Image (cartoon, rainbow, N blue to C red; front, side, top):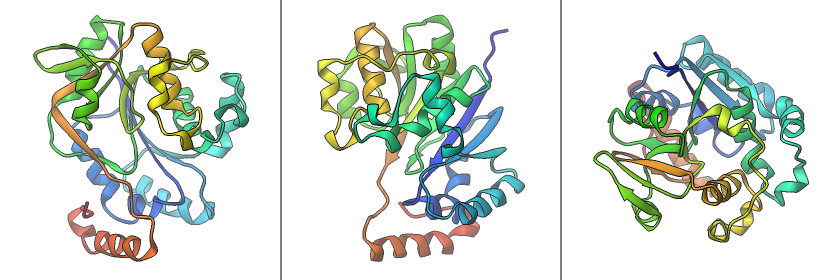
Length: 258
């Protein structure tokens, strides 16, 4: 039988760790994926108070929500060395990219499921097993995800299948990958279509992966039925406070308003 082990990972940073770790959001995120993961890891990236965030993460570990947590900065030097990269190579996109690369290098299972802290699957379709079925049979499927941006999916569509859309494109909001594919040195290519990514992100991880996939005829598989929402947490203090307090009030039910 093929190795179908999957690691779940998500990340927090200074701007969202309270929302993810001090409410029921993390539990809800994992539950929404409707899958029995072999390992669940939380990555902590670019926070001001390591001790405080670490205590919040430790509570989740003790409760069995996650198996472990990692401070990205502790592993970043080894990650950069493995990929022969420097912070400057990202041209402003270092903090948008270093966790993803660290998580890939640290992954101990064949498959890795990454979900951003501000993303959430909105229905409980069993898309992961179905995606692995296709990825086991077809090495040109380089990533799979639920549908979070129908317009982007249709713009990059190559072929419509019974349960999936197959096409170009890559997003770091949610992806299922074969980890070993991404441990290789694939991050130094460019493609004209990849210029669509925002300039503030510099030469970020998802842009580099998108370029590599397009240059080598590799595809993303997007579920027709599984959907996810991606909403940035509010930047202004008043709205952030309201969202955080609302999340705390809903803690018992494991929800945070979106």
